[in-house]
Amino acid sequence: MRCVTCGQEYAVTELRYACDCGGLLEIVRDPRELARLKTSTFDARRTSGDPWDQSGVWRFREAVMDVGTAAIVTHPEGGTRLYHRDALDAYAGVAGVRFKHEGENPTGSFKDRGMTVATTQAKRVGATAVACASTGNTSSSLAAYAAQAKLRAIVFLPEGKVTIGKMAQTLAYGALCLQVRGDFDAAMRLVSEAADKLGIYLLNSKNPWRIEGQKTIVWEMLQDLGWDAPDWISVPAGNLGNTSAFGKALKEAHEAGWIKTVPRLLCVQASGANPFFKSFAEQWKTRHKVAAETVASAIRIGDPVSYDKARTAIEYTQGIVTEVTDVELMMAKRAIDGAGIGCEPASACSLAGVRQQVATGAIKPGARVVCVLTGNVLKDPDVIVKGIDGLPPLPAPVVIDPTIEAVRKAVGG
Ligand code: F0G
Image (cartoon, rainbow, N blue to C red):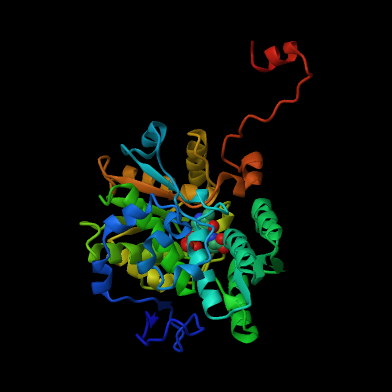
């Protein structure tokens, strides 16, 4: 593990998530070892019956974590689909826009890709209890993997700010839910302190093994595309773990010779939770913090932890960071839901951002674009039923008598 701020190195078996200087740690590998790995090996594993080959994370294991397959805690996860719908081409303004649906992971979000690796590491370092702060998806994933690995799960949630779907799921898998009086950022600070003082193993994306797992969203997407890299990858951004992971994945894939060109990242925040966008817009002069408020509760984050790594990712890929309004992201969600795919509000930022950047001319209509959908449509049922101001309501469910006349009337003849 190497500190991204001061370069200090630590053994991977050491139980720590930050450098002594306070900087973020990342896993480093010998580029020559990566270059020895061939895409044909990963492709052949797709048809294998072994769980670690079926996993869209562990299929790339030599570039994720060096650990014997017997030690791996896997559902398996990944193996998510890449969709295309004509109606969404029209909405985005580009032909052939693809959607990598990470909501198809076992617990309904991309978090499982990082959690399988970080839980495996938790077992490797002998942890008995694991914890995270979460807006609901990380906690659901942690709870499921901890249950599988027989680890005690303790999650820190901003009180009253987690959707019913995510809260129920986290409880169902058996985690102890601590509802912190405060926002996500307060819960994040508290869990970091708890990890340091109480010896609970931290599974937030500050833990570099989460990032190693989440790299495989990009690698599997590239594999889906026959290792022919797209021009743009669009991703919703909150705590910036994914943005960081995508940058690292692209750098490693390019250096290893798996892809010839490096796609540009489009990193999309909600305008009510936009600290990273603000920093980007002023050429990184200030690291901003905001009091976050958005309908996309998954990314209601004002002080993202992985800022430094995410900035490197944007610079490496010549990326763009942007913001979209709640109405824009909810309209994009409508389009995705209406195309029969479905996703939670935060996920739809990816499409809303592409539509905006096509309109400004930054993304050309002929560009090859992949949007990442981060969470499942059932994660936030309330917002679908209740809607938000400025968004036309969906037709309400109609109660009818059990007669054919009532049906005829209800369907308009
Ligand atoms: N989309 C969804 C559905 C999420 O749950 C999250 C983060 C993001 C996007 C943003 O990803 O943090 O890597 O920039 N959810 C975290 C959680 C914070 O606790 O579930 P990021």
